[in-house]
Image (cartoon, rainbow, N blue to C red; front, side, top):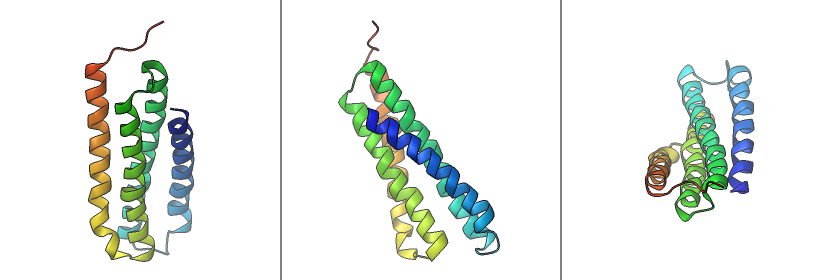
Length: 127
């Protein structure tokens, strides 16, 4: 679970950097539409990096269970596929990445679904 905590903290920090880059460095360099696309990637990266932090903390409380680990890795895959493809589309016009974006979104959805399933099936390890 500590890997999810570290990845979540890294992802949040990187999202702040990328958000500032979009707001200050890309203004005037990209179209408003491309900046909006980039910003969507930043937003989803930030949300799901926070999700990784939550998973890490919850995993410490519930124990390192398989469903939580899979959910965490689905968030990581989702960040790379969803946010990464949006960054590539907006910065470099790599249109080949367009079909990859929904796969990242699906990874996010599956990760959240696994969390729901886990919480409905397991009690916390209360000491």
